[in-house]
Image (cartoon, rainbow, N blue to C red; front, side, top):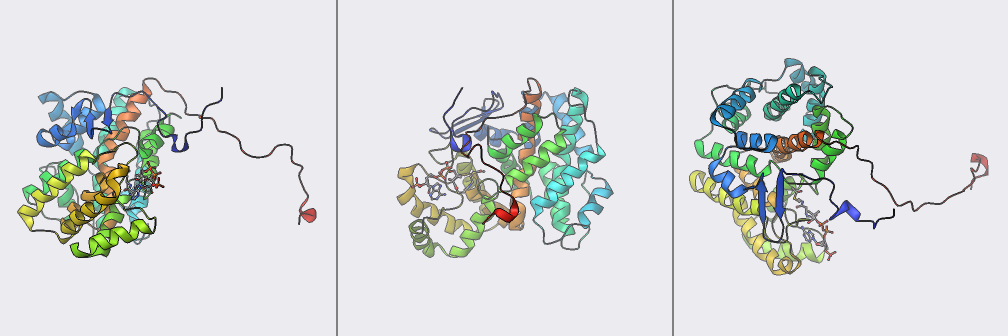
Length: 378
Ligand code: ACO
């Protein structure tokens, strides 16, 4: 049966899902029916990951087991660290992360994705180990040794500790944990869909996550947060923002961190991230990038509001990470270590009623051409 071709599959449902929902007109994002604003105010990343993966808020006992299981599995085998030491230090951290996650699957080769118990432990390992891999790479590429995780520290606190070897101020961990909540899941985005395509072949979850990481890397998806900070640094001062925006739009170039396929109002995650950045700067001093960002948003709104183009999740997140001293090219890996819970939630959901993805195409080439021998071609 012929179908209309929808470039980018825009508006075409690819799955039925109960994991998250976006109301792009009202700017509402819910995980399992709970608004992200409420989760940021009351939950933690680990609890939210549980909610996404298993569909309900954990009881006290479930949360303590989940937290203990994830905490116990944060370490990565020394051979994974050795493998990372062999990678070029100037390589992109997303490539290092993808390689390490693919290699993890060789250590935990449970191929039977119908085994519920094994799937639980795969989810535990992936949620637990991605931060350790990201922090390890941040240090290894500078020639420093990786810092092992500390079991007495909470999820975000431990990650920031592994990055710097010092326990971060409480406000850093709180803000960072909320950033992870906001990046944990977002319906049928490119990296989730990539993972679901891989999952539909019944590939193991390490391969699923490795393929999602590859998709998240691109500048039209997770990679935009890097480019936002580069753009804000290029603008330099709030006074240059307006001129930059006008010129960029006149050149028919996109403003990074603006626009979304689904949101036609300001992304609710951008609203929360903006207030998180204000909270961080109140406690730890201001950020010149934030002042530039506010001016860019103001100038952009004069030109882009009418088209329904507003700041997205990537616009304010990088400013927060920059303030914490995290290198710009690590921003997308931070996104990945949060989003892994969403990717895995879709993987688990899809396993209940899996069907191999095999879309159709509209052939636009020729038929019945003859093979021309090499010496007869012009
Ligand atoms: N700046 C200026 N104009 C924009 C922007 C932007 N950031 N985004 C879209 N537009 C304009 C386009 O130029 C186009 O205008 P036209 O109709 O006059 O030609 C129109 O809006 C539609 O743009 P598309 O790219 O076709 O819309 P799409 O729905 O595919 O865009 C996307 C979504 C890819 C996110 C786009 O807004 C974009 O490239 N933004 C910049 C990159 C970015 O921030 N990505 C992160 C997205 S969030 C995430 O993935 C985590």
